[in-house]
Length: 287
Length: 285
Image 1: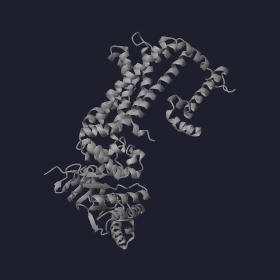
Image 2 (image 1 turned 60 degrees about the horizontal axis):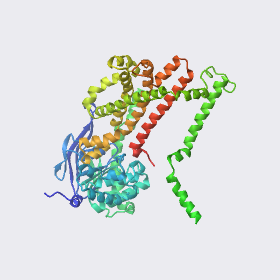
Image 3 (image 1 turned 90 degrees about the vertical axis):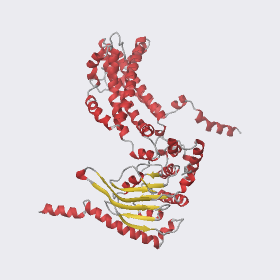
Image 4 (image 1 turned 90 degrees about the horizontal axis):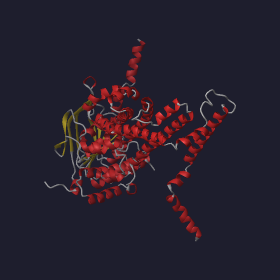
C-alpha cells in the first residue's frame, strides 16, 4: 500500500469497535469495576457522542481507545486492527488543556510533526499557519498557552490535533469549564470543522444538549460498571445551527436521554450513600 | 508641525529608555530606597540617644550607629583582605552550589522517572536529609584533605538535599495529560524526558536553586567561623565577622553582616534573573 498522503489520511474514515471490554481499577480487595462487557461501535465519518452519569467510566473509554490504558478483557479495534498503544491515528483533546505551557501556540501546534520529523519543514510551516488561521489564532501564534483565553486554548488544542491528520478525533469533555457563551461558540466552531472534514469523531460529554446538537448518534451509558443503555440516532439535518435545538424533534431526543440518565443517576445516588443509606443508618442508631 | 514632531518623539521615547532611566523612574525602586534610608535613620537615632523617641528599650543602643559603621566600612573597603573575603565566600558558595546542581538535578530526575532507582536510593537519601549541614563539619574535615574542600563539601550538602527534593517533587507533579498527548503524537521515552519532563521540571529546579542558594550562604558562613580561617582557607565573610568579634570591633561585625546581606541578595537576584530568562512562558504579559 502506498504511504498515505495527508489528503487521503484526512478523508479516510475510521471505524472503532469496542468488543466486550471490561476494565477495573484498584487492588483486589477494593476493586472497582468500571466497564463490564461494553460493546460499542463508532461508525466511520460520524460524530458519536457518549453521555453518561458522572463517574460512570467515560474517561476510561477515552483512555482505552486512545491506547493510554489496556482493557482487562475484550478487544478494541480500529479499522480492524487491535489498538495496543497510543498512536498518531488517534488524537485526544483533553478535559483540561494539555497544551505544553512552555511552548508558544505555534510550537505547540507543530510539536507532533517536528518530533517525528515526517514533514518537510517548509511544508510544515505553511500547513501549521493554515491550520492556526483556520482556528483563528494567527495573531496569537507567538503567545504562550497561559496568555490565551479558555476558548483560544481549546482551539489551539484542536489545531494541534488536526495537524497530525488523525483518523479518529477523541474529544474528552473538551468544552467543560468554559463559560456558557464561549462554550456555544466553541460548539459551533467544532461542528463546522467536523461537517467540513467528516472525520470520525468520538465526543465524550456529560451535557445532553451538547451531545444532541453535535452528534449523529448519542450513546447513553449506564451507571458504573458502564454498559450501553441506549443509542439515540440524531436525525437533525446538517449543517446544524442552534435553532434546531428548539424543535420538537430535538426536544424528544433530549427527553428520551434525560429519562435514562435520570434513572441511572438515581441508582448511583442510592449506591453511593444517598437517602436509603442515611435512613438505614438512622434506623440502626435508633435501635 | 512642531507638535507632530513632538508626538513622534513622545511615543518613541519609552522604547528607547535605558535601563538606568527605567530604574530611576520605577516607583518600586524608590520605595525600596526610601525604606532603607528610613531604617538607617531609625537605627542612627536609636544608637545616638540609646532610646527611641524617649522610650528606652534595653537592646537599643547596643549596636554602633550606621554613621560609624559606614565610616568603618569606608576604611575596610580599602583593605584588599575585605575583598578577598568576598571573593572567597562567593567562590565557596558557588562551588558547593554548582556541584550540588550538577549532581542534584540528574539525581532528582532519576528518582522521579525510575521506580527502581527511587526504591533503592530514596530511603538512604531521606535518612541523610534531616542531618543539618553543620553536623557534617567534623566528618567533612576528616573526609577531605584540605579545609577548603571540607567547607565546599558542607556547602554542597546544604544545597543538595533541597535541590533534589524540589526536582523530584516537580518532576512527579507533571500533568500526565502532557505525557499522554506527547505519546499520542509519537514521542519516544527520550522525547518524553527531554521535551516534557525536563521543561516541566524547570520551575521546580529554579525554586530549589533559590532556596538552596539561601541555605548555602548560611552554611558557608558558619563553616568559615568553625574552620577558623586557617592558612589555606583564608578569611571569607564569615571569618571576617568572627575575627572582628574576637577583636572587639563591633562596627566591623556590622559591616560583615551587611556585606553578607548584600552578597545573598545579589546571589538570589542572579537566580531569579536566570529563571526569568530561561522560562519566558512564566513572564506573562
